[in-house]
Length: 135
Image (cartoon, rainbow, N blue to C red):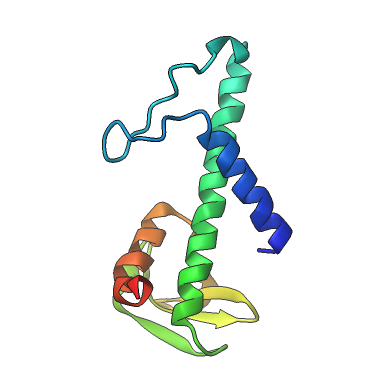
């Protein structure tokens, strides 16, 4: 991610975040601010656009986290770093490799494919490397 793309992402996060209360209602839920003007969203299309923009910012934030975390794991280009336990999706993935700034995971057929950008994979990376990421 370039510096300009990162700045744009941070601005989008700030813009979306400004519609929500700063203190969470529960551990994972933040409510819309009480002064949120529902009249500013006149059509269902605006709700969908809002949801889409939040979803895209979330996806970009996951990509940013994964690149940040895997940069700390993959110290050398072209070297496979094995997971403590395989990542299970439609097949098992046993290692991650960095090559020319991109990350790839090794599947059970011994092929490398792009990393996943799902929340499930992000949590897997966080769980695998929490000791390294916490330091």
